[in-house]
Image (tube, rainbow, N blue to C red; front, top):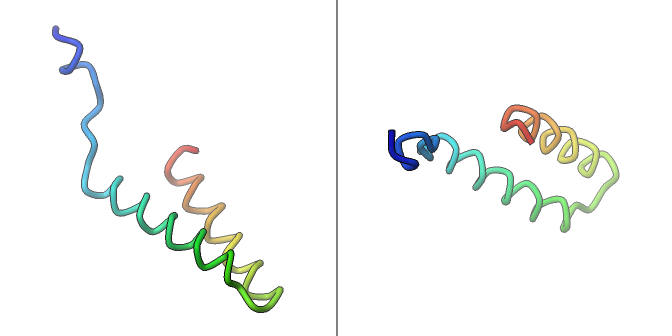
Length: 53
């Protein structure tokens, strides 16, 4: 079996998750309130866990 056959395929869903994560991280940098920061941090944590990070 060739090396590329062993490699996991990069899916549209994985790309989508990465883009959502990047957007959440940008929003976190601009968060105005502590409640907003906590909500974003929780969303980021949940998404990273889902992605296996």
